[in-house]
Structures are given as C-alpha cells and as structure tokens.
Image 1 (cartoon, rainbow, N blue to C red):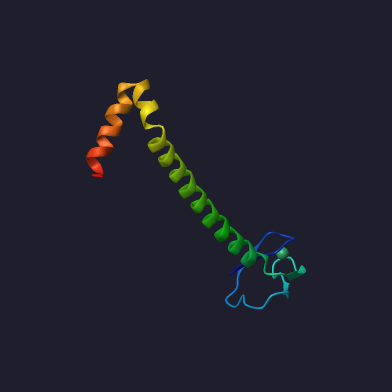
Image 2: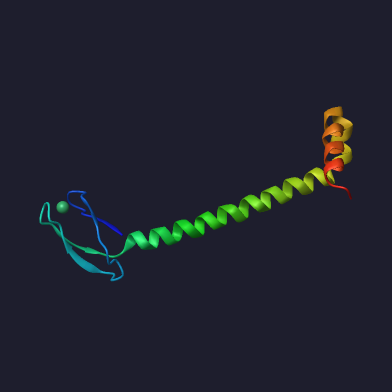
Amino acid sequence: MNIQCPNCDTIFDLPNPEKSNKKYKCSVCQHIWLEKSNNYVNKKNNKSNFNKIIILNIVILLLVLFAFIFFREQLENIDSHWKNFYLLFDRLIPI
Ligand SMILES: [Zn+2]
C-alpha cells in the first residue's frame, strides 16, 4: 500500500498496511501524522461503485432491448431501415 505524507506529498510504499490508525513519520520532511487507512476504504467504495455502474448498464440495455421489441411495429412504419434492422435480428435469433 502507498502512504502519502500530507505535508510534502511524498509517497511511501509500505509492505504491511494491515494496521489502521497508525502513526507515521515522514523521512523527507520529518512530519508526523496518523494514517486512517483511507486508501483501502476508497478502493472498496470504488469497487462497489463499479459494480453499480455495470448493473445500471445492464438494466439500461435490457430497457432498450425491451423498447425495441415493444415498439417494433411503430418503428417499422417510420422507416424501411428499421424493417431491415429487425429482419437482420430475426435471422440472427430464430424464435
Ligand atoms: Zn513529508
């Protein structure tokens, strides 16, 4: 885990980051601070946010797919391109 000095922004690579709320002393500027292992918490939040985005994308994709199926007749009446588009899908997915 990388720990950054809040005073001079020097990044230190530490091999044992398990202990939280540990005191560190910067070897560059001699600044002492308490590290609350915020980096680890942020990484966890980022991962859950990433999962949420994937789920949201799947839901949107399903809604678009549903709309395409539901409004097929209306879209086919608007333009012949849509008709060809649906024919292509009919050939790909034999129902
Ligand atoms: Zn420092």
